[in-house]
Length: 101
Image (cartoon, rainbow, N blue to C red; front, side, top):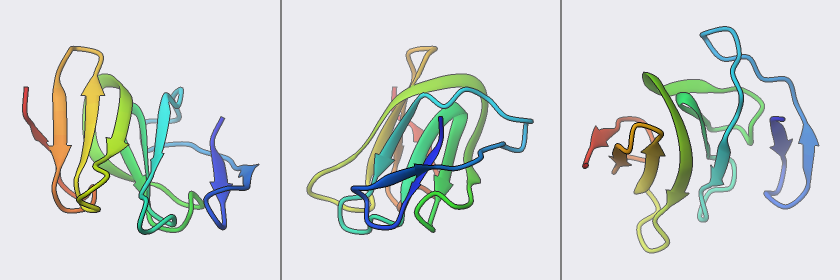
């Protein structure tokens, strides 16, 4: 289930209910240069800027998302894959997303 971390290495369970009433969490990605910023995939993509204490919708979707990863050389770039085989990219730290495939 969802977890929170103060330092990106030690994690504690935390409650998570998204705007749609709560869904299975698929994957997390912690931003390498700012470990308080975390992406989470579920139905759509959620983002936290406080180490997982609170979450906001980053990409609302009816599609379940799985893999998500920050680009290692560009801290504001991340990619996520939808279960409909779509690939999405953010270039602004997870605030807005565009489909690239």
